[in-house]
Length: 143
Image 1 (cartoon, rainbow, N blue to C red):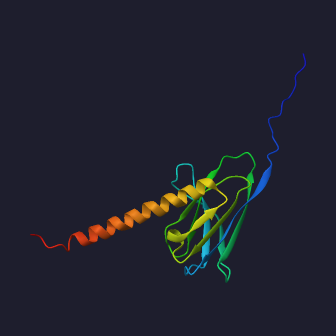
Image 2: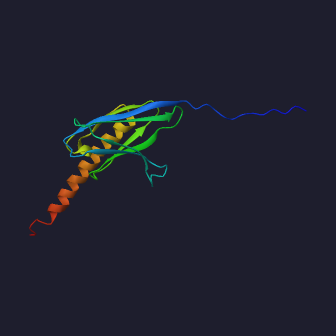
Image 3: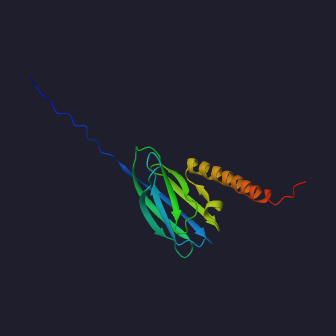
């Protein structure tokens, strides 16, 4: 009787992925990159980058080539709203913003991240309008 041993080990190829950009006029000096857990309950800290004098930052990740895209987020030392990104192997994601990062950022290099950006801008613009209306409803004179 002949017995063979099969190996299930695979050589997983890792590829470079970058997240970079420039945030100017924000008053922020550090950007934190976090990977979101599958249930979004606890982000895992991946890296921190200090903004250069011109507002530039860069993260380089090594990701398994065949892994599914994952949610990441960028947050700042100022405590503002975080930016959600969908990151896949070999992505080259670029962000730009002037002033308030969350309200003004643009993203290129990831269609999913771009869609999240568009949604966030519209959603929070509507939230701000509703907050304004709610704040001023109490100032009307009743007839």
